[in-house]
Image (cartoon, rainbow over all chains, first blue to last red; front, side, top):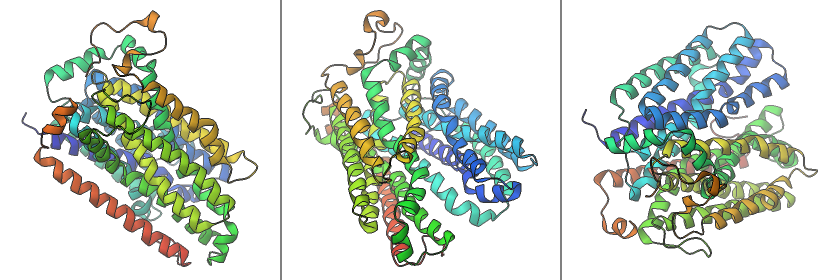
Amino acid sequence: MKTHKVEQLVIATVGFFWCFLMWFSTAAFSPSIANHYNLSLAALGLLASSAIWMAPIGRIIAGWAADRFGAPRTFAFILAVCGLVSIASAYTTDYDILFIERVIVAIAGVSFVVGIQHVAQWFEPGEIGTAEGLYAGTGNVGAGVGALLLPRIFGLDYQAAFLWLGVIALVIAAWYLLRGEAAKHDKVRATARQSADLRGTVYVWTRYIAIALMLAYAMSFGLEIAMNAWLPGYFTRGFHEALLALGFTSIAGVQIAAGTFAAVQSFTASLFRPFSGFMSDLFQRRGWTPLPMIARTLPYAPRLHWLAISLLLITLSMVALTVAGLMNSLPLSVMVLVAFGVFVSFGTGGTFALVPLLFPNRPGVAAGFIGGVSTAGGIVYPLVFAHTANIHMGYLYIALFMFIPFTLFYFWAARYEHHPEDHGIGDGLLGRPKPVADKA
Amino acid sequence: MQNNEQQTPHEPWYKYGVAFIFLEMFIAIAVSVYSLYMAFNGLGGFPGKH
């Protein structure tokens, strides 16, 4: 079959966009569902949080499956299963069954790592940052587009939305299966298939640099999804007087204002992500390596420096959020939040501009580990935020006690000038996996 | 590899990809500015009113 890498990028991006739309479609209609089934606030919170449940373990399995069976078959399978269950949920009248069905539909979120693997198998090292950024950033917008458009198109009729989302998912699954090609060359494909064994998986999971990238992604994407859930409540409670002063006096008005400030973070974090991939490519082309300690002679050293800069900026913006909050300045807090969203996107785009280069023979397994385990941040950070005496102090505590150690670990793991992936936990016991070597 | 990357010109698709990136950033900035303008003027956030 004659194809081009741009066609493969478009297929992966459309597939991921639709999966992201399905992933958060339950949240977009949660008021309608709550009204239909008379749900309590606790039940509504459970329904909203269920979207993330499957991500950590699901992404690990999906990454392995992409290496083993190829991205087109894995992605089409995810789209087909989620699409069929979404269609079934449109006809469900029992809430318990609906809840289970929507948890299954939320598996769509694991498709991220499959597309990352697919794009990595097609694009060259010099353009991988931009390609992965375009894929992931454009796909992530599906969440924002869904939140804005789905309730406007379908109103309260969530059943019709679930039906159409499912039907179109089946169409995209067929497209992916017909036109998708797993890799640019058979040799690349064969290497990924061979390396998707238990030994190779344990090898990736124990590399210091893989753990450092996983923590970097927890500092960026994990934080992004945590803030999506946390920020509306934060502005409502932390700046209640300021919102009243702006004229938002009703409960609905306060929710709209708080939601708007929170959405700014989500929008910038998604839409600036491709720019971060572009910046990673730019650092690489220019050979910029400004930071101390981090390797300077590795083939992808400038990309390591770009990600390190992103991690420092994320940490600083977390401190700035606390300072703005303690100053009780709503405008300053929102301005910091805009910068915060951009810096988070630098981290997400910068991480996945590196993953395929560090583990070129195991892109799926590596993406599954780094993109999967890190989503636990979406559960951990809000718990810390919610358990501080002063609502503004949570950002500072996370920065001091989690992000600074994570960043120091990254600097330490990225210091090797030759093959950082050779260094990991239990090297004496594990050795290197036999069939393939991860030398770029 | 680094030197090769510096010397190899990008393929034709790359400039369209970069143009799309800047379009996405423009949308992000425009939506953010409009939303914040609405909110700070007590008019409700994008795209609704309170």
